[in-house]
Length: 250
Image (cartoon, rainbow, N blue to C red; front, side):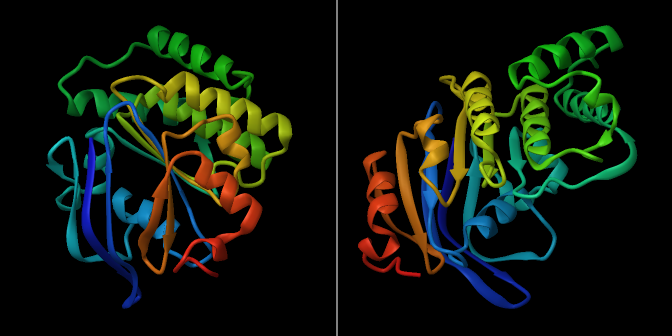
């Protein structure tokens, strides 16, 4: 699914990723944890193709396709979804229209017929129900007036509609209360826990992993992965901090 080999990336000429390698197979959920400034969000933005994140070495492929040679919209069409720590507001743009245009643009790139209005609304209602969102909210401008939890739940609805192969979720648990955390966790499981799909969760805390149980946990520090293990590694980090892992102290 995703293969990252010796990836180096810089932001404003400052090296952030310094030889990161990672392989995620279909059906797997991986979590990346690490101290502030380790490069976790940089990894997500680099894979998503965000401007300003310059790849200076290494490679990243999705199902054999060279991600780094694709434009951001081409990466999305290839099956990559990037969930943001801080979803942006887009005044004047209806969320439901934004979602329909996004879904049909991806379908067009794959040679598929566009969804009709009725087909799209049926799909949107189904995915909104998974995240316990009222469809009336999706008729509002994108994220405008939404609480932090509502923005994250709306983003999970978007993920469900776009139906990606690989979801990279950057601190989806940030700013969520207990109920919203559970709802988002259940939504991620319902949408992405399938044999043909994979998830990369970027998080600081164990709490999201109580709901979305990962197959593997990695510690990212100093721009590279310094330790990998099973779910028990996240519990160790929660109890003892990053200083418990050699090379990962904040």
